[in-house]
Structure formats: C-alpha cells, structure tokens
Length: 86
Image 1 (tube, one colour):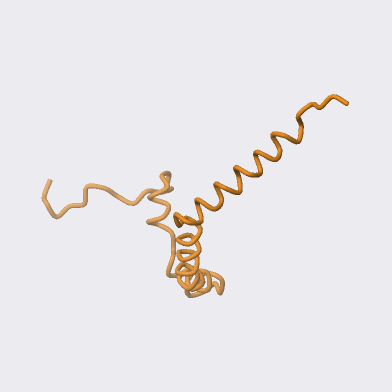
Image 2: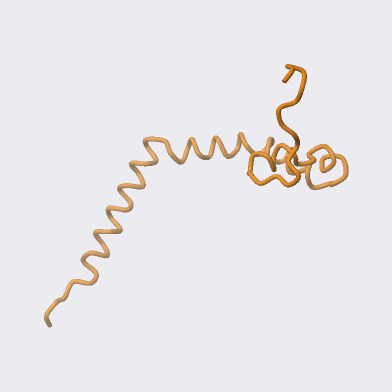
C-alpha cells in the first residue's frame, strides 16, 4: 500500500459515542437552529457565575458551618425519639 492511500473509510452508521460526536453536523445546527447558538452563549455566560457559587459553597468556612448545623440537627433528632416514661 502506498502512503497516499486512506487506511479507513467513513462509517455508514456511527456506532461509538466518539464517532457520533465527530459526525454530528454542528455547523448546520448552529446556522439553522435558534436554540443551539443561544445555548452555547448562555453556557459561556453562566459558567463564571456557577464557578463562583461552587467556590463559595465549598469554602472551608462554609463546610465547617454546615457540619455544625448537621451536628445540631442530628443531636436534636437523636433525642426527639427517645422513650420517656411518664
């Protein structure tokens, strides 16, 4: 075989997930569907907001605060169902 020849050909049906992504007509959807470009733009615009929310929610101070809240709640429910004789 010469080096110029193709060793593979395009699949008739894309069986694997990767081949489905590779053969997906992104350009067609971007040009002809209103929701596709809006979805991409919205994802780009909202990503920093979600990043800062995630960063604040997983900060060390917040984790300690919620651990204390869970401990108090668990303590409350632990004694709530204790049997008391009348």
